[in-house]
Image (tube, rainbow, N blue to C red; front, side, top):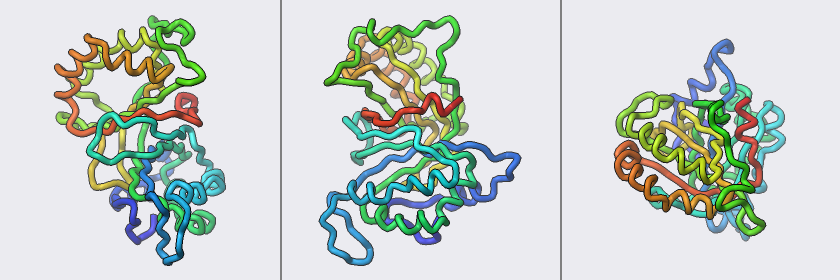
Amino acid sequence: MSTDEPRYGRVDRDYAIKLATMPPDDDGPVWMVNLMKYREIAAYEDGREATITGQEADDLYSPTESLRAVGAEVVFFGDVDQHLLGDGVEWDRVAVVKYPTRRSFIEMQSRPDFQEKHPHKEAGMEQTFVIGCQPMMSPDPPADVELPDWADVPHPPTADDGPAMVLHVIRYHDTEAADRTPPHMEAYQSAAAEVALRHGVRISAWFAAEGTIVGDGRQWHQVRCNLFPSKAAFMAVVADPDRLAAQHDHREVAIADTYAMVVRPTINQLAESLV
């Protein structure tokens, strides 16, 4: 990472050093979860007059060639359809990039082709979180659980209401280990599982957060990505009385801080990326 603080977030220097100095024998893939909030109009540091939006500036930044050069790939990308929970920041997009190693993420920052495009990101991005993650579990269901076909669920995908990813960024009250879910959250999951199964919910990825390389100083424990056949299916799960009771008794007790949002994916290879 650059030694200069970006305008769109605070760099965690300790985590950056960990990424850059990871011994090769201990290193391995890392999934970087990006939450993006754009400026209404791009603001370039060189003072040029901009007539493009922040999102359009970020589209100019899109470091596809740099990612490919270090062996990274975008495994999830989508626009935020609806905010559910959070502290007032309304994120615009979400992307998840899988890097082959932690060091490769740092190495990309120094590439000339990356640095050449980075002013567009500085101009377009109002705020961003970049959370380094490791998979917590396989997305495959247990052997004794049969997932229903989406054609057979109460709210299947349609042309007007297609698949919806619900993404949760979570910090818990009672845990220091990101890969350990506290008991109250485990109880909520057990109570909500039957409802979710009935409506065809798929776990795309549950991640343990190992660090937030760019953010606002907060640290997170987990990022969860659950795929619903439609937004209508999500609303049906939300309204289920059994799930609501478990949310009140357990989920709200477990969670100290969270963002939750509905994202409409244009790229979704999350589950495949964990194999």
